[in-house]
Image 1 (cartoon, one colour):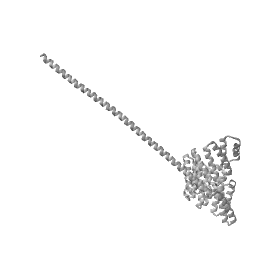
Image 2 (cartoon, one colour):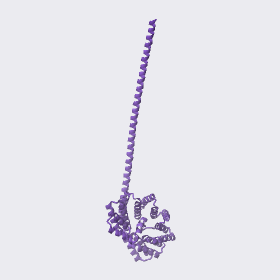
Image 3 (cartoon, helix red, strand yellow):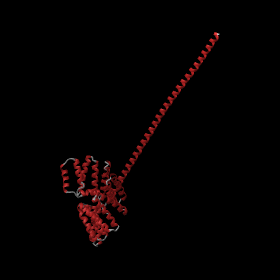
Image 4 (tube, one colour):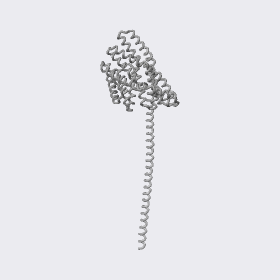
Amino acid sequence: MKNYCLPVFFFLFFLQTALAQQSEKDSLFAITRSTKNLKILQDAYYHLSFMQENFDDNLVYGRKGLAISESLKDSLAIGKFFQNLAISFYFKGMYDSTASYYYRSVEMLERKNAYRELANTYNGLAKLFRKTGNYERAHQFYDKAMDIFVRLKDRQGISTIYNESGVVYEYEKKYDAAIKNYNASLEICKQLNDQLGLSYALNFIAGVYVIQGKFKEAEANNLEALAIREKLKDTFSIALIYTDLGALYLAEKEYNKAEASYLKSIELIAPKNFTDLMMINYKELSKIATAKNEPQQALTYFKKSSDLKDSIYKISSVKQVEELSAKYETAEKEKQIQQQQFEITKRNYWITGFIILIILLTALGFSWYRRYTLKQQSKLQSTIITQQALATNAVIEAEENERKELRATCMMASAK
């Protein structure tokens, strides 16, 4: 069902901000003209890099801010600017540039242990690989993002990943798993009173209902989501609902309602140059015109869709995404190998140290035992000598006593 670019909530944060009052942007522009403080300029350009209605303008301010961040050697800010640039390139359909900037963002954010931002970048990469059809890699990056959000106890982030990864399951035709994820997100959004998130969960569930032929349930969900988004005045997400309604009505063969929905989506997004969604809308309009037996109109829509597709899906672009992914995975493996080597080296140091300690303790014990043995031998020798001296004295004393008794006996005999 969802064969178009579904926005990540992280992206939607920036897109919602882009609808802020003009006075806020004017204030930021005034700051860029009036201050020479690089930190203040950096912050102003950061906000301007996701507040513009045109992604080319976002890129202009993102690059200006990036240049300042690089001059300040601010790794965290550099990583965040790379992330913003990747988002703009994604919505422009330039996937090779998207991948390049996301991977550069990962490198910077990992250095600073900026986990929440890193999770958002992983989410963006997962979305990119979901778009290019590499579902295995998409799951890998969604898992990385989910692990971080769980550790941070960030329920909104967890809700986002449930929705986004649910789309991959839907593409893989694992509808039970998709519905399970969407419902998990729905419950979290209700608890957080996250209206935008709630609208996406409803919208995603509706997509599965269409596949299952539950058209009434799908329409009810989409209209409920549309009401929420209209209150939020979120132009892009409103356009997505109209595209989904178009798909729903097309599945029901209500061609006029489907055509009106797709044209409404185009009307909303045309000023913002959402190339990918425009391409899908024109492609579906071509199908509707064919079904209505309007061959000339069908051809017109088909050409518009093809022109947009050619600007997005270039073999070289997709190939470069894969090459960048391979480089990233190689770098990750090298880091793992280095870490393993470090752990082995550290373990060897501990083993060597332990062995040396054992040897030293053994030597010390042997030395002490040797000294103790010699001391005991010395004591024994001294005792023997003393005993020998006592024995000798006793013999001498006995002999002397015998001599005395003999002399006394002789004297007594003489006296008689």
